[in-house]
Length: 71
Image (cartoon, rainbow, N blue to C red):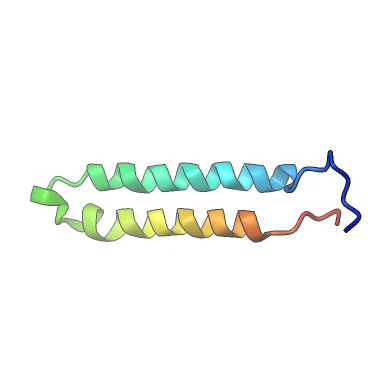
């Protein structure tokens, strides 16, 4: 292990992708709140919102596991 003490564990592109993932997760939860059906049992609350939220978590995992391009 020849990593220096001042080296960050992620590159700037990893941090940008993490912020994008957080934004997508929040957008998914926001979409679920827009459902007009009672108790959120409509299309937005049961289908579209959860799919977008899961996509946000996939982006997060990809951003964390992705290696920086310069290493």
